[in-house]
Amino acid sequence: MVVIFSGYITYLFRSETNWQQWTYLTHLLAGVLLSFTLSIYIFYHFRRSIGRRLPGISALGILTTLAFIVVAATSIPVRLKREAE
Image (cartoon, rainbow, N blue to C red; front, top):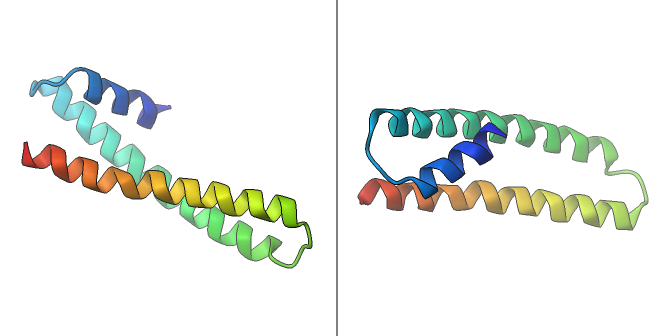
């Protein structure tokens, strides 16, 4: 929730005040921690469940993982664009 809330705050209220910088830092640290934690969970969960023959559930897990990767990867260019402004 911290990542979502701080992301919307920084997008909706564009200013360069002190609280905005703290919101950026909070968003960055929470996002890195969340990405790291979820990446480890996804890796071990996929390794543990790879032998099961449930194609529908496996496909859903793979699609969810791809969605996570897309969201995590798209945050990088957005941040770099914001830095250039």
